[in-house]
Image (tube, rainbow, N blue to C red):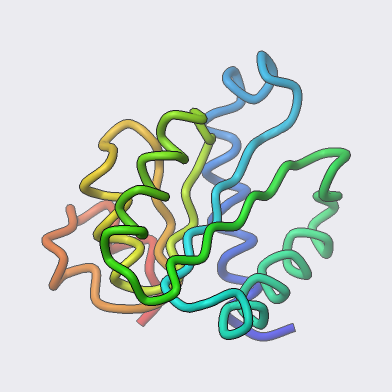
Length: 135
């Protein structure tokens, strides 16, 4: 597993602890994976994320629910998908790169956002958010 996969898994576990009450009410934690590229291009990052979660004992469909959205490089579609995750009340949004992180940030300030790569400082993130991202 790559370093990015492990980092994502550790960050998400921390996010789940913070939202334990919400997860207990809905059954299992619900993760929204927001991708900028097409499904064909984003399959690698989605696979690494799922592998990292499995290695920590999170079993998709049993102990965690993971839902993907792929924007196909379309900014309007990305914003709509981020809004869908907010409406679905996911426990955490995992943004695969800067564009999805920006869309998620515009859609919510209440749901934690984990950014896998990109420039969080350039997006105007808080010092707390910057501390969650490896450089």
